Length: 209
Ligand SMILES: [Zn+2]
Image: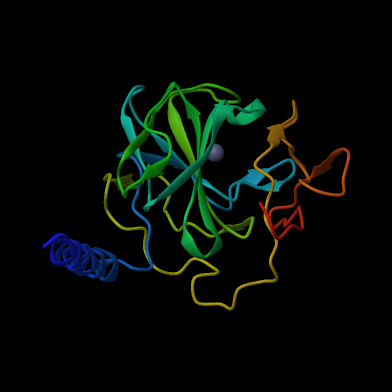
């Protein structure tokens, strides 16, 4: 009896998993509602923004753009209170400037991982949102002043989803933003110092992190 119950439970889980993942297998959700106050190619002293900013009230719940695992949550230089969620297939998403943190560990899509704020290098409450794959920042399409709703899919078309995976390289989550807006990353292996990140930068070469 115990054995057959186990099989039934596994079967139900498998069906549930297929149903939910096939519905939106290749997209990400907008993590929070608000206005796109800065877009991907917005100019920066170090190049360009390579992220979108979603402005709105402080304290709004920020959801994981996709199911994954919270791999980092902490104060991180210009990012302020930063949350990084790792997803399957080398993807990760960054949520910066939070006023507070939410759930840690494994998270489902739209699980609250943080709350919008203005910590770090920020002039008002917004979520700085990045999508990366193997450390490279992927294009996130959004028009300036677009109103976006939490939970709506990010439009298809950002670089990387349909391309072949690059060599196994993993970005160190240790990043800082200096006083003139340059992003620096600390390599996870074989490097002692901080290196400046390029917009398409792949920093640390590691198979383990
Ligand atoms: Zn930003």
